[in-house]
Image 1 (tube, one colour):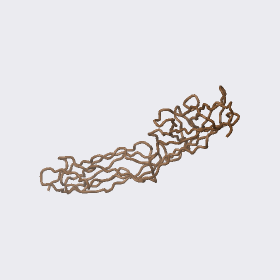
Image 2: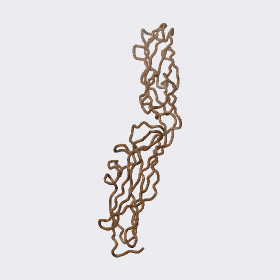
Image 3: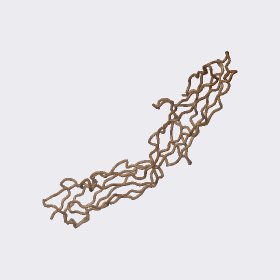
Image 4: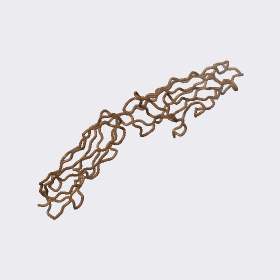
Length: 299
């Protein structure tokens, strides 16, 4: 390895990045056809407080020390974060950022390396959840009444935009105080919008039942082993990744006659790749619970 006495032993550098192809305000955005975007940003620190951006905004800066060698390298960690609570279809969203390395050759003279592109891939996977679980369902019934007793409880689902899903009850009937009841859903399926969608669990106790009660009024609640499960099923699904970390080495080569070349290695695409599940269950705690003093049955 050759050196010359007149060669500088250090160089200052600045590593800047663009805001990608589809920026909006302060956010980078990844794109999925047609006209669907996910906001994300790249940060220089693990606490996500300093965004990595264009020159004059927030580039990486520092000094490389060559010592007696002819080249020096530095590894710079950066951190990716996708903004929460975005409505997105299940797909791969893509973007391309460009990194540019500027370094000092001699005092007051800078050079710029050939820019390197940084592909970004954000994978969103289908997901459903019960954003509002069902509550307690109460009935009031008098033995041999001529009309059915009804009740209902509301719940809400939140699923990925465009995702078809189905809903069902673990069981649709039962008996309390000798009164047979049935349960049904206001809808058996839906398509996600990214927002909460509201449905009902409806209950019915048919007319002209005697029931079992040795006093003027009786009440009862479904025991834990008779609680009803509300289930939601959708296609192959997964949670989504919100943050990751990638490293890129910024390398400056020093020739024997002075600093003359610089490069940034080819990047690995940012990919947020979660794995998979396929069913969401919500235990309707005391879904069929009669209010004290309301459920009546007379012998």
